[in-house]
Amino acid sequence: MFLLDEQVGEVRVAFTDRHGGLSEGTAASLDLGTRGAGDPDLVTGNFRRLAGALGVDVGQLVTMRQVHGDRVVALDAVPASPPAADALVTRTRGLVLLARAADCVPVVLADPAAGVAAVAHAGRVGMSAGVVPAVVAAARDLGAGRGLRAWIGPRVCGRCYEVPERMRAEVARIEPESWSTTSWGTPALDVAAGVLAQLRRLGVPAVDIADPLGPDRACTIESDDLFSYRRQGPHAGRQAGLVHLQP
Image 1 (cartoon, rainbow, N blue to C red):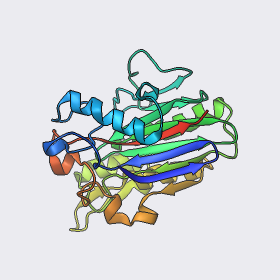
Image 2 (image 1 turned 180 degrees about the vertical axis):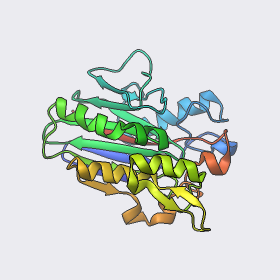
Image 3 (image 1 turned 90 degrees about the horizontal axis):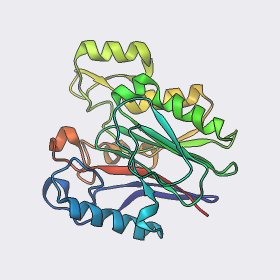
Image 4 (image 1 turned 90 degrees about the vertical axis):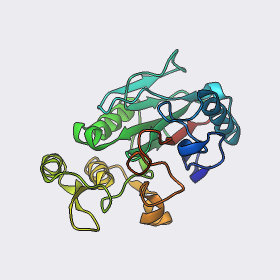
């Protein structure tokens, strides 16, 4: 169920894989998305299993309707419906914030001492739009300080994310660190490298899940333990990065 599950003070950070759920077919088995091929009732069951593994009520899990932008929503309670946003931030203990992805970069942020937690969904468009600087600013507005740190989850890597040359050039003009080449020699983007560069410039230390796991296990295209839109098509499931600011 978890690629990474880490406790830092009163904050729990985790990234899920595709195992341990109920969904079937392309979305098997721990699909946490809403656009996959799986039965919605099974997806609901997957959320219940995730909540059980975290030791929380399923009603504490907070998702968002991700729109590939830079909007950040600050929460002090579970919203009536998932907000249209690509980042969430809170000081409210008990909430579990989730950012879902199937090739994009899930980012988790927390300052355990200040009691601030956040998540972001950073794809090519969101990274270029500045969703990561926006969520860092929002976390700092809520009181995060020098203790703010980030975790970067599984995603398509720079040697697999092939794009047209013009797209690579356009994105690299915004974030030069994202420029990459595939393992077969064609233009590519490394969105995670771009996110990490943005965090460095903002003074936020980051843990990249690819470091302990190895780049192949952290790449959604290379690892069968992960969902990938590019590898599996529009019926791929979704994994998640999550943070729990514990009571």
